[in-house]
Image (tube, rainbow, N blue to C red; front, top):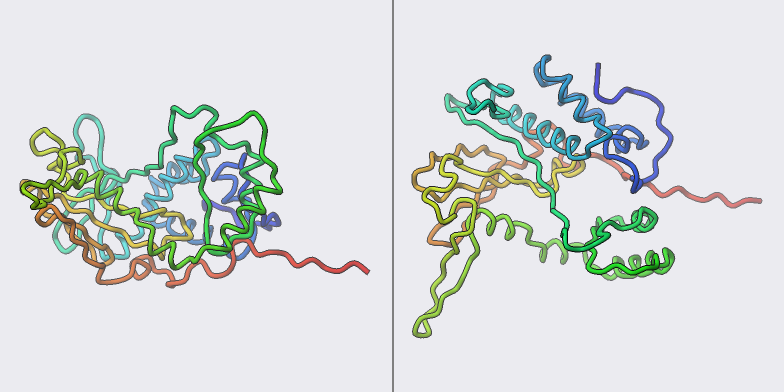
Length: 313
């Protein structure tokens, strides 16, 4: 048994707005996506036999994209740990209050537990009709964009649906005006994580002398004593989709609480820690693809190659 059966697939069109993640992964045709399915099948086979049916069911869940994403996240973490020389026990019976951690990890005589959590950006509940009509989502997806993915946020909705032609033409012009390298340089998603974990950075001025500090509103810096001190570190990866598995570096954010046990750092993890209220970053010793057993540039090829139109005689 595998997750994705080997069969002839012919529909290479991008994901449709009404299509679930599970349906898309099983439907999309092309060598690029064959590589993704093959690796998911292989990594799934590395889980113990008794856990494979439940994981497979979540990967193929057509009722919950969240189940699919969380299963892919666990698949990625499990393979990363194995490739880093760790042994991994799935859901060991060491939890309290009727719950167990996802992984018990052993490496070089040291042990730690991992709780895998998948999170997504929450939409603003105060904005009515916050979902774009599927016809507009499909129009956005149809815009050729080899360098960028496009996300959207609704600030206000009207009674009429905008013109698809004008929307696509405007997006095409805007994307063509952007420099991918500059966008990457200016994008700083780690700042949001830093604030969420360590608290908001603030500057105080007294007698014209600035000092810096952090508000007690972070995961580890909440007002009550030793908030989450039992958590030694939080590992984050920006957008850990299959096509970014070999590209995006995991970052281990280390607890600033002196009562926390020191977190074990794997060679493929970057690190971040608070030093005198400032956050210091260290790069990984090895690139992430070395632990995943995949080439640096994987998957190979174009996910959505444009078909050439033949001239009719």
